[in-house]
Each structure stands twice: as structure tokens, then as C-alpha cells.
Image (tube, rainbow, N blue to C red; front, side, top):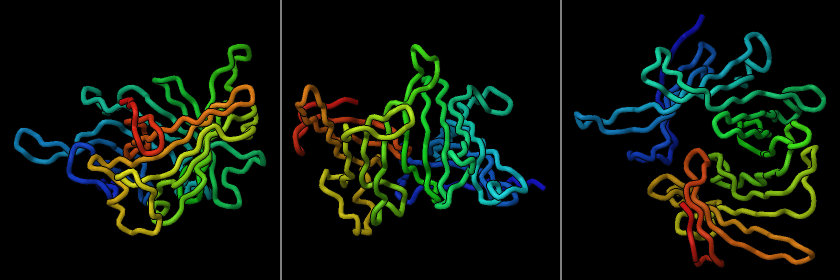
Length: 266
């Protein structure tokens, strides 16, 4: 049987404003989320708070196999929500596919999985290694080779640590960006390092249980990043701070030295 049970979920740090990370889910009889509506809470004409969908996500689970029973999705599709379409599914925006490791397994001994992601609107592709809690551990980005016509890896981002309280709610405390070879192995020294800050721009206390210190009034988190520009044996340091929304997307970037901002990009 198929049971449609709709529930509304919010991150514990969300507030009642237009920037809430809010979604609704339809789950099957095994408790697996098969459809997810991401959106925002808004005031309607009657001054009532209502949920307005923006995207629709569909997940495919295998039935009768270990992957499906472990609630690991084999494929995920994200559509733009369109009120004028019968099924509300507008343009296909993203697709996520479970891919095997080199030994052919879909889940390794540590419970990790690997995903291939395609962003059809921006013509982007990347691969993700996730831990057994679904948190991103490593991301590989690349581009279509001009001469080969094949997807070629260019950079690797290691989300090195899910430490302390931030790690328990899925926020990495450090990350490293490096150039890769065509097999996805990091080459040479990192080209960027990032560290989590609190909303005031100070080093985070990972043991502080007051998570409100991590998020600004719009629910964003803040990172300090050091970029290393190397040329002919010389290294130049460029520092910046970045604000990311609840989906991990960049909203603001400020360039400066230390904690002093000298320019910004929004």
C-alpha cells in the first residue's frame, strides 16, 4: 500500500519570517519522504501565515532491497513549483543519482554513499560523498572538457569536520578546497580553507549549546575563508567572509583583512 501522510517540518533554528527554511513532506508507509515541497511562510490577504511552495522534490526508493529499506534514495528530482500545471511540476531543475563506489557497492563499510548531481538550468554537475547521517563529506566539481567532450573533475571540497554542537545539526566547522587530478584526488596544497564563525564574526565555541549564536536574523551562517593564490613560487593570501543560507547557498561575500571588511559582493 501507499500512504500519503503530509507533515510540515522546520529546522530548529528557523524563525517566523520570510527567510524560514520550511518544507512539507509526503511519506510512504515505510516512513520514507517520497515528495518534498520547499517554500516559505508568508502572510496572505487575510493576515494568515500560509506555506507557499517554491520547488517540488521527488525521491525514488527501491522496494524489497537493502538500499530502499535503509531509506536511501536511488534518485531524486527537483522541479520548479508551477501553480498553472496540473501536477504542479514545472521545469526540471536538479537531479541526484546514487552511483556505485569502485568496488560496485552502493554503500561502503562506513555507511557512506556517493551521489551524482546535475543542475540543468545552470549546466552544472558535481559529485557528493555523504556519511551515514546524510551529511556531505566531500564534493567534486568539474566541467565539460573542450577537447574530450567528457565531464572532467577540477576541484575537491573536503568538509573536514562536523565537530561539537554544530556538527550535530549538520553544519561543518571547517572545509578545504583543492585542485584535483582527473580521478578526483587532491593535488598539492589547498587553495582555500574555511572556518565556521558565530553570527558576530568570532571564532565559534563548538561546545556551546546555544545554537542561536550561529545564525543571524535571516537564519544564515557565517564562515571565514582564506584563499591562497600561488604563482611562480610566491603565495598571496586573500581573506573573505561568507554568509550562507539554510540550503548552504552563498548570499553575501565580504573581502578584507582579518576581521576588517574592505569590500563586499551581494
